[in-house]
Length: 484
Ligand code: BES
Ligand code: ZN
Ligand code: ZN
Image 1: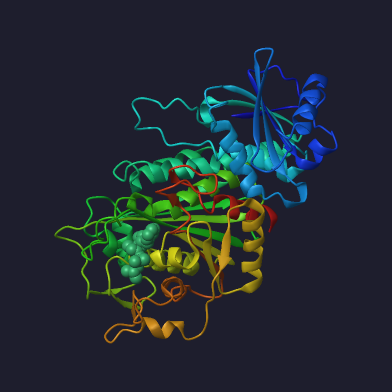
Image 2: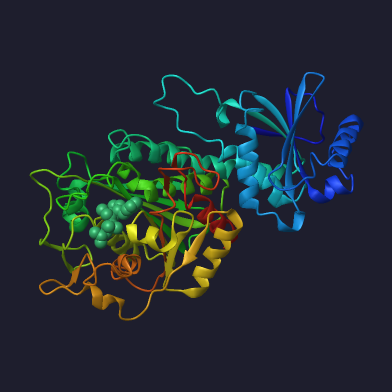
């Protein structure tokens, strides 16, 4: 955990001193400690440490390790890379075993302080539940970071938001048979119970059936688990204030269904509820930050399993909205769950804005890779606001188009619409989003975040995330809600 201290003391087992090139060159240090200043000046004159980006230099004095880390020219610093560098320094052999570390940042600007806090709280997160023997590097819960800063409000806010991010990650990382729809309901109720502003509605199999959310039911048909549509109403503003709905895809495991996923494509599919997990993280944040907004938090929970009851390719199913849907592929299940969820929410609650979050398409990874979430919207000014929050919070997103004519690709010969495109291998992310758009009821500003690439790290670590869930979308949407 990070805590703040107003000035550098060099009284912990270790200190991490972050310096720009200008600071080293002009001998302007963000601390007062004469002998350390002299040492840095010496290192500079002998060319050992100039403050260039990526340089690190360990010093030992009076039984204390001081790790100097260069961040380069102040004007050229990428705060994404900076977060990575701070994480890397904390995980380096110099610091990894040390619990108490003092960090002296090169600047007191808000964005720098935020970056250091996130490097620790988000960057040092690691999923250790199933490791019986701990690795020797310490994760965020085990470290005690003393950040030299007096930016208390910024600090408190970022700590809160980071907790929301990590709550989402914990849900995504655990086994699919632990994080079921029942588990989601329990977690949601734990949060909602603490607040008078929240009320929870859960539609189980019975209610889904009687109301006609047959797409949602179909996806879950092969599973031994209960399908659930969880809706949390949060009243943070007056009765007349409009609602913003956040809807998450919560496929607790995606085997592909009878269109079974091939080897190599299924192993991480417990992450297919990352949209719903992000909704829970955002809900946590909105409540903790006490935002003065009216909100709907919606989680569409199902398991796409195979079994004797599984729904089948070629089936036609009547949706909640009334349109009939041809199942072209049982692996395009997320859009089915979301179609019923957005239809239900827009029809019955009439939100002014709706954002859905979903690990929807492998095509999004082809288009944008693993760092950028795909954003598709029917309203450009709404999209711009979301993109601004994405940029600001380092929870990146890139807009892809939505245009007239896309709906033609979803034509079916014997139903109103089909759940896959007739043009295989082209613009799969756009047609996935288009399918969802077709189920909105009434006039609603809609944005879709495809987090298929960004929600989970399988191979090499990415940005400043280790293995597993990233909490994609939580920082982005929390920031949007704070500011709009
Ligand atoms: N959950 C997957 C998408 C996905 C793929 C998420 C990789 C994360 C990583 C989704 O349900 C799916 O299987 N989509 C299909 C759609 C296709 C059948 C139209 C896909 O992307 O191949
Ligand atoms: Zn699928
Ligand atoms: Zn899926």
